[in-house]
Length: 220
Ligand SMILES: N[C@@H](CCC(=O)N[C@@H](CS)C(=O)NCC(=O)O)C(=O)O
Image (cartoon, rainbow, N blue to C red; front, side, top):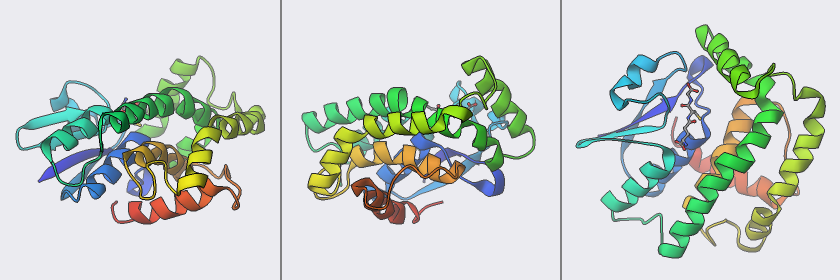
């Protein structure tokens, strides 16, 4: 059976954006899988992959890491329930993968960085603080006084996606697809780790998130 190495926090909370994206893709493709929880400090569990990040998908013939590589591998190796309808949808999905991880996620990080220790325990708390403070060259609380500014920035950034969801129901069209799953991981991360309210209930993305959360609830 397919195994997905999945980031885990306190009380086995699964909060990683790219891991959620991959889990929704696996559900979409109706592939049986099990998840293997990996804490920040459990690098020994994933040492076999020769790198330090999850998601990692292990299959009979080996393993694949990086959510985009995993998504492509799934669609190439399981032909039913396609994730990419055609080359255009693959290109747009690749854009979304890059845009969400490089533009969206860094803004969200500024909004929730100081709350993430609340969903961790033991040595993971120090690991998270040390590695992230090295990355941002300052305390994880440094963005706290500007949260409303970053929330506004985030809301502006997602406007084009909001328009698509408003017009179609989903980013992929009338039904959810990989384009939605790539976007969803980010919202799931915030809802898992933070008390921040990013969306008003009248926002079309609010209902979209509720719908996809029901799908996500089918898996750990
Ligand atoms: N580009 C990668 C990003 C993977 C990544 O950054 N994973 C994070 C969790 S969201 C991780 O494993 N962090 C472990 C660490 O920081 O030690 C993907 O899309 O899979």
